[in-house]
Length: 47
Length: 161
Image (cartoon, rainbow over all chains, first blue to last red; front, side, top):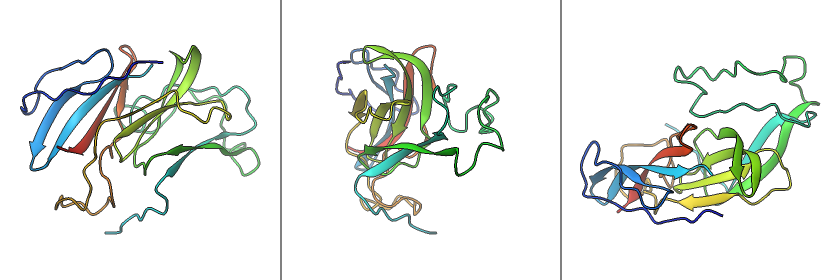
């Protein structure tokens, strides 16, 4: 069973703050903060 | 605009396939509507025909329980080395910011290979998002894409800070 890591949020930039990998599993590649919310792209290995 | 009112907290994800086919001749579905032109076409289909897609031969194979509603298209990757073997896997993304990987073929495999949650989703009721098509959580509401070469699923969602 794959280990799952918590996502790491970087310094907010738009449109692309780069890749912040945490382990091999998922990342937030882009984060757009607006008010109390953020929109983001998340990645996860399919295995 | 109409609200789609949730009737259950737990949504049921269903698979529809040709019920009489034992070995499902599946192909990868890696993005919304199958290709970059969003045609929705499976040009490698070898089993389904207008003659056998009917009430007797075609229907629901099984259901899976997930943690909220889904607005996205389930994606399929064939021959994935996962859970100690090779499997065809269906990936489902949920408005609760959850992602599930289920066995696409085994009716008895009720538990997912894995399930992750990308954090507390935004809710329609939290702020004026100017969106009336979604009722309740609105985390992942767009179909993700899968990069098969790098074995990565990419999704986009809205979360609370």
